[in-house]
Length: 113
Image (cartoon, rainbow, N blue to C red; front, side):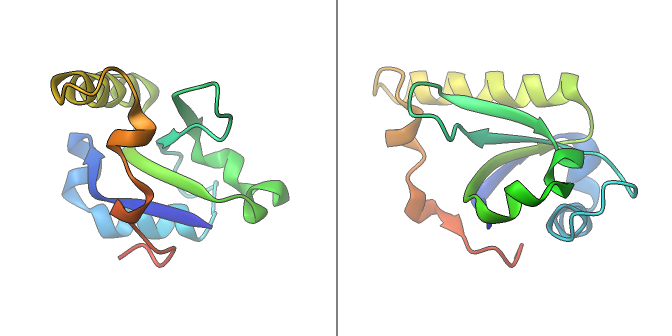
């Protein structure tokens, strides 16, 4: 299931139509438009992951819980969003621990709203 961060980081393209972009990702239709999602890493040793939403078409992603922090229209913008998130975590003074800064209670359910 896909969980969305309440204050989702978005690039300029996604900010124009955030609900439409989320809906496309939720429906897992890779032939429509490919976005890049910045997520909390599923592996405890990693901090973040950037994946293309075309990968969500594969069946194994239907069984994973994914916590999406940001959504971008291309890979370069996803990297910029990741830099912004890392700076925010460092400014919060918690060291560099995104799992503590982005708590799972700050995510909404899989409905994309």
